Figure 1: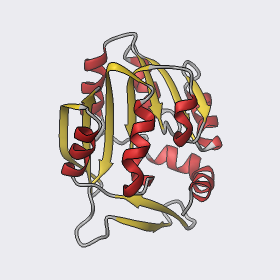
Figure 2 (figure 1 turned 180 degrees about the horizontal axis):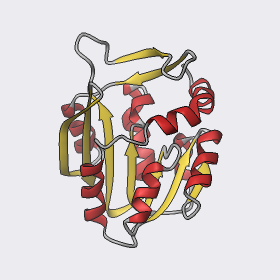
Figure 3 (figure 1 turned 90 degrees about the vertical axis):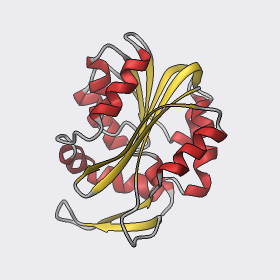
Figure 4 (figure 1 turned 120 degrees about the vertical axis):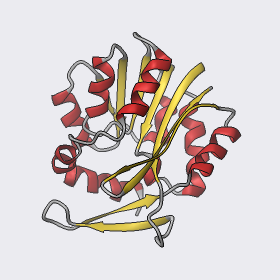
Length: 206
């Protein structure tokens, strides 16, 4: 599945997907740790912000937020629900084109859709936006037992069929990316389970 196909999928499922994830809580401890490292008034890039749920959480805790997502429909929802933040329709491969430099980058459930062979290049592009001494938060899923680490997943959670490409990670893979990109690991939550999904959360300092 190419980026354009995935974008169209998220445009299609945007409202249902956004509503479906409102009650998730697995991410709160890691996000609170990220906020604690930054302090009030820090500028955060919510990369792959979806409908703005996490942007709103960050804003309410005193951070300044710029969000971006490649789905026009998700950005429409984010602007509707979180008018105090700034949002852009943007393919994150092009994020380096943003004029801002950030104190923090929030990258939750984004590497899920990046082929593993391309993950480090993708992260390097994002890190060009991070100030020295800044922090990046990453959350990814561990593979399910006996399932491939990269695969197309067919779903019909919302009463209609759709499919998305997923990459799944083990903690050591994320640690190795951090080491290779000269990031100091300052927080780990490995793993957290939500709806049979094991989430890895990690924060690095540039």
